[in-house]
Length: 376
Image (cartoon, rainbow, N blue to C red):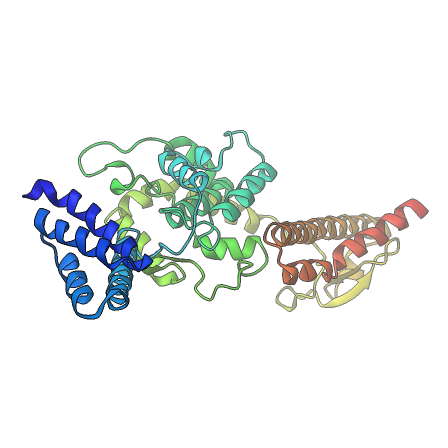
């Protein structure tokens, strides 16, 4: 009897089409045949409706049944995909997530070599962060991939952590209880976690929130990704009882910091500051003769430094000032480039305007200084 189920379903489908076409006799014929082959509630309901009220009532039963089947199928799909069946993703995005999942070290995650420069590192992170951001990529596992990308950049962009990671970070954990990635393929390399959450890093990198109108940013399925506390708790759980191990790893860094502090204590502070510093007594404002750069000294400055020494001090002041302006200008330009890039990719007019209205004060000052140099 069970073997007749498929034939019975075919008969019911033929009967359903006959009902829609208004052919009552054909519908009755195939419904009766379906009942003989394999009785079902659906065929029985259509038969009763057709016998009592004609094809119009049976049509209503058929439509209700189809709607129920559709709702059941949609619910089944939502359950199997974690509530994200309405979110579309491509095969390329799925393959991208799987590639990140298979990566064994942070260099492989970002797609760079160990010799990569800071600019190459930033370029790689910018490209991947936009590609795998949960508001852009709805493929299963995209949130975890985004976390891993952010963690990789945060560690490798820190010179100290990067040196340590090059020595020990890429090694596979071994022994019982150390399966790579905790069973899901995402190993965050114990002892090399970032000091900032991926979403905070993303916002800092692109000068604001993600360019999206979605009110549920950083959401993947039923789990909201925007709660910093959850992520920090997750990292705390990952660390477990490895506090002593972490302390041993950080010992060389502590020694370097202590030596640096002691060295600074032994070296006398410079006789000037580019900013007023009441704590050191450098509150008297002066101006260099050449570039007219403001700087601050103590009240005893005139009596301690004569003309020859003053000329050398003012030269140092101007060099420090120009270096500071140049570095800050570079940061301004980089921020503007990042904003324009994100605005172009996501067609976000708000971010484009924000980039266009940046004042770039330090870059203007750098232009003024360059003109002075050329004029001199």
